[in-house]
Each structure stands twice: as structure tokens, then as C-alpha cells.
Amino acid sequence: MPATPAWPPKSAPRLFVEQELSADTPVTVEGNQAHYLSKVMRVAPGDAVILCDDMTGEWAAEVIEAGKRRIVLQPRDHQRPREAVPDFWLCPALLKKDRFDLVLEKATELGAARIAPVLTRRCVADKLNAERAATIVTEAAEQCARTALPEVAAPARLDALLRDWPQDRHLFFADEEGGEPAADAFCYAEGPAALLVGPEGGFDDAERAAIRAHPASVAISLGPRILRGETAAIAGMAVWMAEAGDWLDAD
Image 1 (cartoon, rainbow, N blue to C red):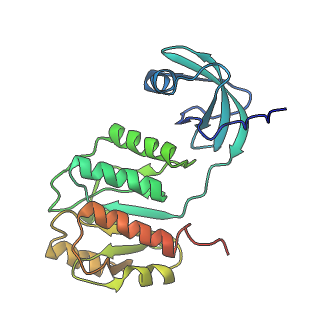
Image 2: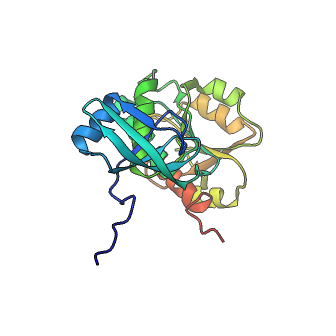
Image 3: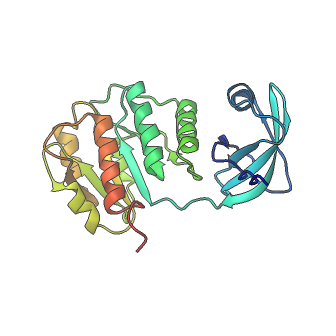
């Protein structure tokens, strides 16, 4: 007798939806998400789709109706609760669109709780398309099986960021002029943390002085080479996750 296939299959598509999920209420998907399910994934009644709502966590849902522009799904099994990501903020200077898209995507994959873009004097870009940013982090979360979306804040000027900084949160500052090796600084710092990374060309002297003077600031080094803004943000966050985040063994 053949074995019963696992349900939901590992190949089931994943989607974030705005509706709070429960076993009592079907979910209707329209627009781009319906197009993705019907045209790209070619779902049919009886197929499984993994749904997340950024509130209750992850559900395995069954396709009840599959049209070209409208998909109806019924949540069946609650697979996982909403994950508890480390209390880590990434504060990257705003970059050109394609480079900042990469930062948004990789920060989501690496597990950032919050992405807070910063405007500095040497920033080439000065605006962030909020809808585009939300789409990027949502698709990245679906790809890497996150059940919690990172918050994406509106861009803030550096002086405002420093003025309003929470007293209990470490502000690690990736300083091209040097600082404590990142891994050493991260592994001994407990509690909420953030990483501040500059734009192409770095911070100017006045900005660097203001950051270093802040009581929460800890200057760190990301190695002997000068990194692009997006590389520094991704590399720095990866080191933090390895030394102080959820890459560590539970023990």
C-alpha cells in the first residue's frame, strides 16, 4: 500500500495575507497574489498553500476555489506561532534603489526586527517608496519562511535618529576609521541592539563626531577593507546574528 503523501508538501507556496487567520474563516486572495497562485504555481482545489498573517503565525490552508483572479483558501492546520526574532534594528543609510532593495531583502532574510533607513549628508537617495519596500520584505519573508515581518520605518535624518534614540538600546556604529572588532563588541553586549551603517562615501566628520559622542554609541570595525554600504549592512548584521542573535545554539 503506497504511503500517504505528507500534507502540506514542502513545495507548497507561501503567502503573507492581511487577514487574521483562523480555522473558522476562509481567506480570499485576489490581485497579484491570485495571479501568482493560479498562473505561476498553478494551484487547484485540494492543493495546499502556506499562509502567514504576521499575527498568529503560519497555517497550512487548502485551496477551495481556484479562479484566474480569485483564490479561496481554508486554513486547516496551525503549523507554527509567530516567531520571536531577536530585538535587533538595522539602521542603514539610504542608498540607490537597487542597492537598498538588496539591503531590505537580506536584512529580512537575516532576521532584522526593524529596518530604519537613515538620511545623511552624503546620501544620493532621499526617498523610500514605502509600498515597494513592503513588497520586498514580504516576498523575502515568504522565501525564507519567516512568520514575522520586519517593521520598515520611514527614513529619518541622522540628527533626529540620534536625538530620539532609546536609552536602553546599543548603537553599534560601523566606522571606517576603526573601532572594536565587530565580533568582539557584539558578543559581550546584552540587550536590545542596532547597527548604524553609512552611505557610499561614508559619514562626514561632523556626523562621525556626533555619532561617537552619543552615549549609546559603540564604534566597531568590519575588517580591513572599505565596504560598500549594502555590503557593510549585510556583513555587519550577519556577524551580529552569529555572535549575539538567533544563530547561536539555544544552550
